[in-house]
Length: 325
Image 1 (cartoon, helix red, strand yellow):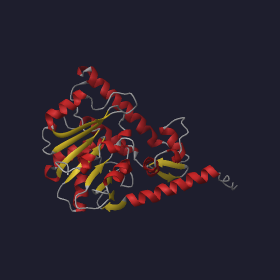
Image 2 (cartoon, rainbow, N blue to C red):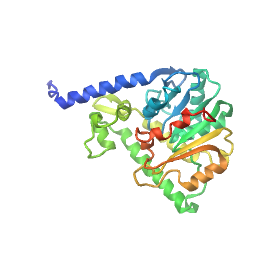
Image 3 (cartoon, rainbow, N blue to C red):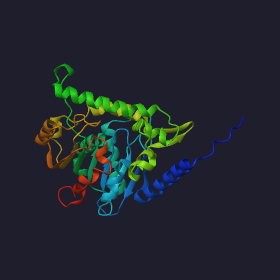
Image 4 (cartoon, rainbow, N blue to C red):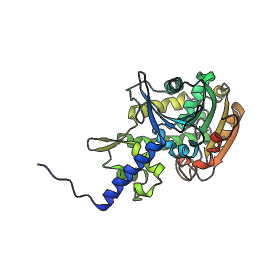
């Protein structure tokens, strides 16, 4: 028997209008393109100019993580946000993931754009992809900007790891577990998705800055029974191991020949947690990489580093002339 839908409340109508407004606003910020190939990639241009920086997101995210960065930077410099394979609107094969596959995709993007080389900006896993690209294709990477990612892999066996290394491994595992848990879930509506990220807060799209609200909306696709995250669970699971066991060691990082900038959050995945790049890890990175710029963003955690409150504190790296231009 057919059951008519419940009448739309004024709050429901306002939320719908908000969603449409966010979509229209972001359509002005990003222009979609497709990179053909066995795995088709969705890329998004923001701004114009001959020297775009390439933006790579984290393990379960997509290019809209850089909404605020694009709004800050694109009036002065072009950007290209990439939906890595298995995420966003890019192709989602059952297999074929890992840092080398993503690095090869970055080169496909550069070829598609007609770029001999570029500055690669990577957040979280995107930082590891940026470094892998610099190591595998050194002539194609002019500089790298690491946003709370790209720390060296520790080769020690668990029983011989220092207490600090064990704490870091535990923090990463706990942070990823929460992000991964949502990938197999179906949400009744975008507001239910927000409740996953902000449990019990009652936050709606209207309560969030537009750039952040759009990130959560783009992160979802409509399916039977509600909404599911666009990130493929297979992609996230297959990429988590390579980040842990294939990411460059400290010795391997010495092979990165281009200038590097490091932006790190003062907190880890959760408020008050240990940072993912503490001072001792930064010191090790400085011994191996040609780090020309380093910034610690006080009060930011791994996620909020890209939010409107904190993004303006590091975007000057991509705006100023110098080794990262």
